[in-house]
Length: 253
Ligand code: PEP
Figure 1 (tube, rainbow, N blue to C red):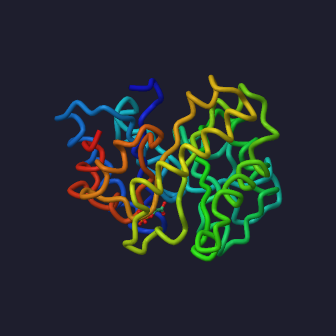
Figure 2 (cartoon, helix red, strand yellow):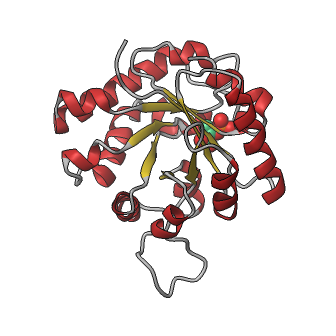
């Protein structure tokens, strides 16, 4: 058994109003009090929920994550939320590079590089998402796509800074589609990612980096996915929106 941190992180996306979100976080907090779980638990909420959710839960039980942050420090960027603002709510994590942000909001590797630096500078742990679209997998380009996403946004970091990154491999064709990567496909890619990290930062950093799987992960497939040696947990969308669905994934460890 490796010593890497195991993490199950929910990504609520743009769901639930403030009251519903706080109620879900409180219910999850209560459910976790009654259990001793073997992984860290994170909830990724919309920006406006962050402070209330961070107040509503025990920081020792649930880490709070934003789903994005700005690529600028501060100033005249109407509608943006900075990494410093996220950190000031009590959030400890920020999901960056989610495929929905890359695809719908045109986030580029260069923007993501800035966001990662600002997140780290503000003491946040980035949960950095990478993953290929269906065409890329079908044409056998999935390894090179994932490698170049990592290289373009993260390989400028020092080994110390890289050591503070959590990765989430999310094949885009599996997100919200009900189509999960097989345990073998997940393990194959996670092992490839770890080899890529070893090549750049050495075995010690690579061995310590948590690599989560995301894409239609749920109570019925989590255990099989998490039992792979290089799969260190999950980033969970749809199945994080109810304690009844999320708790069994946490308990899959
Ligand atoms: C996600 O958006 O990170 C995700 C994995 O979504 P889902 O679990 O709904 O596929």
